[in-house]
Image 1 (cartoon, rainbow, N blue to C red):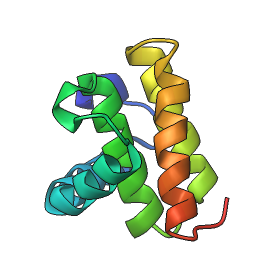
Image 2: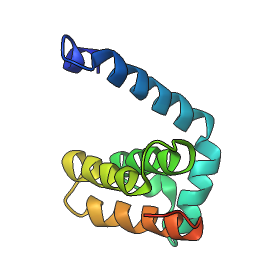
Image 3: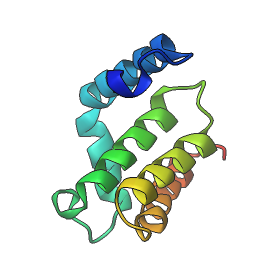
Length: 109
């Protein structure tokens, strides 16, 4: 991450945010994984593509614990991570699961 951001505007803020997200996902991983498991009916989390699973963890954590990130943005960013680093089908899969969590938790779009 540092090499990709080195010397660019916003480097410190982006690095700080990335650390915040990684720490938050790690701290809340069990609760986030429970929500993903419930929403991903008939899917075992361990069998999901690693990128998809981690993109959903980040999106779910942001939806629930980072109020300055709108729910729609958290979902869209997770979708884009899946599409960019996993498969084209990942976007629809990630969207379906995170949107189900959003609806079940009564979160605004």
